[in-house]
Length: 428
Figure 1: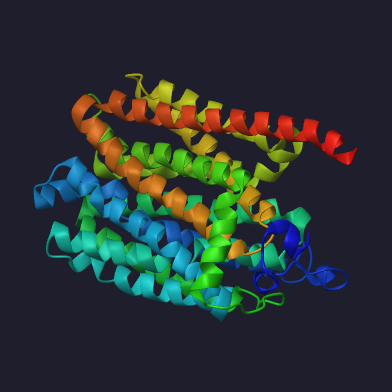
Figure 2 (figure 1 turned 90 degrees about the vertical axis):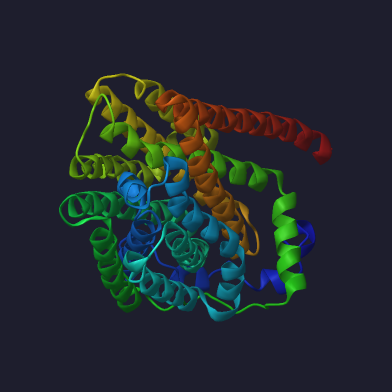
């Protein structure tokens, strides 16, 4: 598609080119040289990102106890991190257009792990929230740069699978971080547990830098604000991209609310579980690893909108099931929520990369910004709803968000049918 047809300038199109044959043949493909190293490196980056980003989430009851604050106040240690990421993901994506994806991802991880080693020494809830906000801002260089790197370096047919593996790394990081912090905190407190996560992230960051292949299809772009704003404006004018951004935000609203509050529910009546067991609940993230990595096959069978309907329905079913007073049914509900969320996220994020015809880093950054705003909103509103109406309040917030996903997908289907009917008329 030409620059004129997309509304982009030739300067913007040069930022994230889609190589044509024969250079396209040199892009990575499953089974080809470098693909496994690339996949494992980005998997480790995903592990480090989510382990650090949500390192305090399973520990909120302990943080509340030490600082004498309510769930809604302790939840800011999660919301500040995701909010910092949401605010800085677009500027960091612009830096990746100028200095390279690998460079920005490496620098982001270096700063984030450094801050991670300071978090255990926070003297107050205020200081802890500030450190977590800085950490989230540093991590902003990872998500958008990673998806842009994949869009440039991986063949289009393998893109959904490759992004699914990166998202799977997110789920492993989120799971392992919460499980490890739960058991370590039970013996030595929350400060030692977040320190352990910091050390694990250091190892992931070093391995990531050593393994990730040097980019072969990146071309440096401009840091001029006018160019950046023009690219952002183009993306926000695209109805499909706007719908995908909203879907990502709504899915993450559900997920952020559920997993911020679940620790309070399971440590309280009628379950009364110890901190280590509550941390182990997050092993259900393994389900997300599977659902994210198989998102490509799901889209192949059902189409993008069909996959989103299935993901939304699965998430809603899990929310309703989690209302039960049986621990087994609550756990099954968490499994369904996790599977639906990660599948929906992988489908929506990969669709953004395929839809954007230029400025892919900015397109991905806008998605990530909406996604983590959803996380911050979910963490805060979910905790407030829990304080006001218990677990049913949090579930109510989640069901409203899922309804939003379904509504947006229905509107997208109608828009696609209208466009299809107009094409034959335009052809004549």
